[in-house]
Length: 312
Image (tube, rainbow, N blue to C red):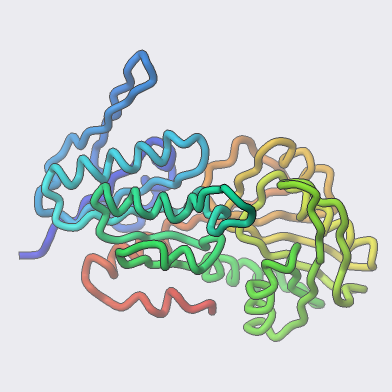
């Protein structure tokens, strides 16, 4: 007898979980969350999940209650005798805290990995971790997917004649180089120096962009300070046009205004995080079909190695 599949969602990512369930071909299982006056909350499954492969969809962007809600859902699933508990975390929050970059700080990514394991998760599915090595923080399998499989078809549809990939910082060089290699084009790099987090003091360009259609690639746009400065730098150096691909649209503080006022023709993002408001310069591509495909493969014990590959 085949193991039943249940797809459930936390409140933060229900908009995406509904699309995933529809793409998979079934309804989202019902979950209710009871809120108490003191701020405490209690999620509960309103359908039987005993013996099921249970996929819990919840990104862990701010506030931290989203992470706590995911942990409570995992614990509830374990206590409800689900056969396999898979946390589908489209955006893995706290991913930028993957190392000690100065004395006396925590490594939050490792702590969260420990918390998820302690809660009882059996597997993690996520998209574009800020650092690949975060996979090693887990003692359970991690299916680390790339948004490139979503971006490539869109990029090809643009038919940019003088395409050049770019990275807004040296940390994203590998990502931009991978895109450039597959698309058989050049890539350039922005070198930046920070005085403090989210604030760039100096930025310089490495490479030629004159007359080129530039596409900046990054995993996260937070305040949009760095990437809009990079766009301006490209145009000042003679670029024909500039766009950006970003997987996770955190968009905090003045990000929307900066993008609206920027030199970007378009900023293409995914729906791992919901937009706080719409913008004529922001295009959203869905990850629902990709995640639904992975859920099917995990459930049926089929290979998903082809989805790890940074290719078309």
